Image (cartoon, rainbow, N blue to C red; front, side):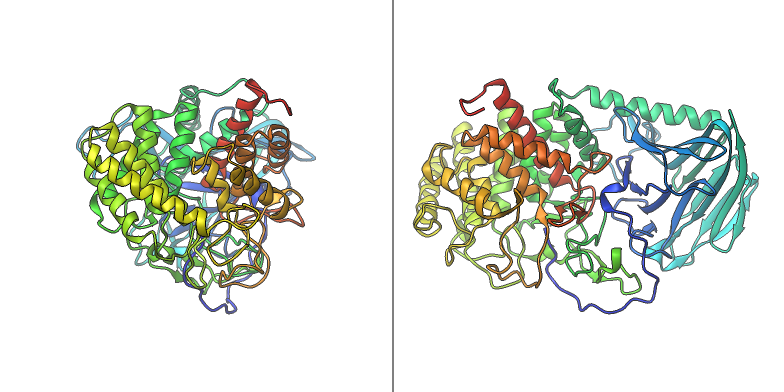
Length: 632
């Protein structure tokens, strides 16, 4: 899921950002906004009022682009970090020479608050809860005494607009910040005593055993908490919300259960609740290669995520979330004659890509991109992803919405019209368009699922016509997309391997016992891996428009786990899955890639598609343990 236009790299004037390892960040979410918390207590990334809005805190990409620090004055490495069980609330424990404090960070969720009228932004069925547009941080001294420091320095519009703070009628306990030309008002409410130094709000105090303090940064209509008691109660309400939500799921009693639960909580956190869209990640421009130019904005939703998203949600019992995401996909498919590969989380079509040359980027990785030009690329897998999600939804929900049939026919006809043409492929390469085999397979998926759906609802003529067309596409793929070994290849003009062909058994292109499926999966496992982890492709065999190497794609490695299960290599699948889970960040979160040399996570974070593939892989492996094959 790369961008489509490479901007020239150039030096940036802002100082280089500190490089906290990507996987070490904690992730906060409330269904509208996300935030990343560094181990040292800094909130280095948050955008408001939506997760794809310009940043309020952007130190992730430039150290002068805004940060929000809370912690002891003389210690920068915490003793322990964890999520409160079953929640997206982060707890950081600090041990100092003089005492201990515990900091909790949360984006508050509260009761539904649109009963006075109809919300202009919510398009899905109202729930009992809603985002409160408040970032809350609490601190409690549990023993001894600790000198504690608060520093809140928002810099709006990706670090370009400095704020001015003013006290409110609450005196030293509340300030408001605004920046010229930006329609966003921030309110900082606390029982610390605040001072303002330029664009920074600061507080310093000695906390003694039993002391509790809070600080709330808010930007919406819901009043923030004004006392520690109220802050505690609202944090507790949010914790219970997450725990009640998670309890709706179905999780196997297995040692890997926590990875499934953390993935579910992360995917829920990446879901923009007003529309049901799932953002690919919380961040933009985190590099796929440190110091390199493979840096893209992932705060949007890709149609190709649809099938895996629905599969993951349904398999874990989150049917309502699956229906909401499906409804978002149906909305844009019904609206647009030419379905894009990706959309804004509000359904926006125009995701114009620009570069922010004033930012140095994470670890000096430039250019820093906002927007994503890939929205205008030609990629032929989009129709298959949509139709497969419709098919899955219809089977699980046992119902096909009346508006779906016209959408379905339109997308099948688009696949039939375009399947013979080359495209940019699933990896959005920037070189010459090719007849990518995986794109052809997804066109087959579109027509095959269309035929099945037509048959289900009694449209027998279309079903017969589309089934014949699907057979024609399959014959073409098997004639031109298979090498002399019987391996599915990257595109029609090469023998090169491509990890996207691991999807062939998962979408049932051929039976799982077909020798071409087995040969393809094993060829990728043996020849397209580094230390067992899967590359998308060999960069020296693929004209992707870039130079240099890239990390292994964690999505593809989890696909390999699922594919190995499909062909009966269950022992190998279990071992690879265990290895991949061992690479999880300290909070069980994943980026897009894993560096083959260092094990560092790379790319935007946390990555929805990686967590979706994790759910698919883990459920595959657990399924084989319940019905073991002979090689286990």
